[in-house]
Length: 74
Image 1 (cartoon, rainbow, N blue to C red):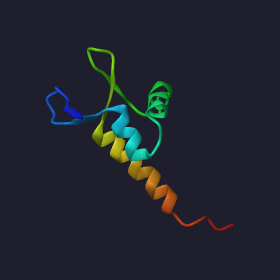
Image 2: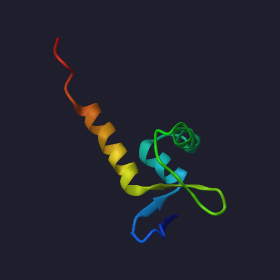
Image 3: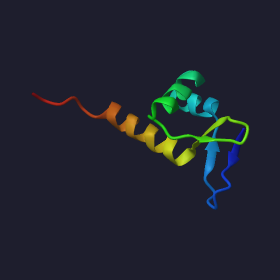
């Protein structure tokens, strides 16, 4: 399930479960990241967290590129 933000943009919002699946972590880990400020979140009127897809994909791309960089030479 995903919803579209009503902020004037057609930004897709992801649930903690969807973000967790992308990063291959538990949804509670995503919630902890949001509480710690590592990833931005939006609260729905019901109090649930949603995450901007563009921010999530950017974070994932940064982590993926860091993981594929060759090791630094001394």
